[in-house]
Image (cartoon, rainbow, N blue to C red; front, side):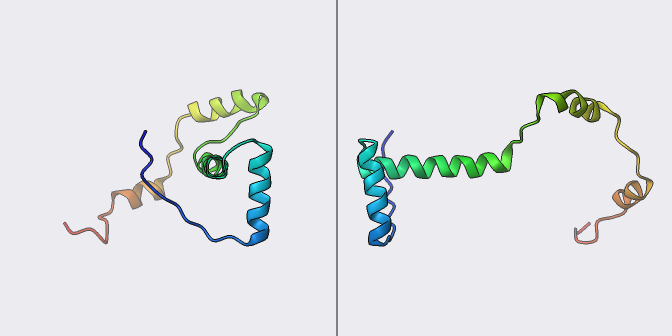
Length: 89
């Protein structure tokens, strides 16, 4: 994979010292350490928005609820059958 993008950030001296110290403790180049930390944080944000964990003791209850037939809500059916007000015919 070709790396062809650059990211520049401004940090304080104190912030830089913390990151440099952490990278040194991991025996990693600063840029590699920063990239890995950034990717971990980004993956966590994405995971928080795209998946959820169900405790094992609640799994059967969840599956049963998902397998139930949908409730028929007459008001919702009526609303869905009306022409959409913001779409040209």
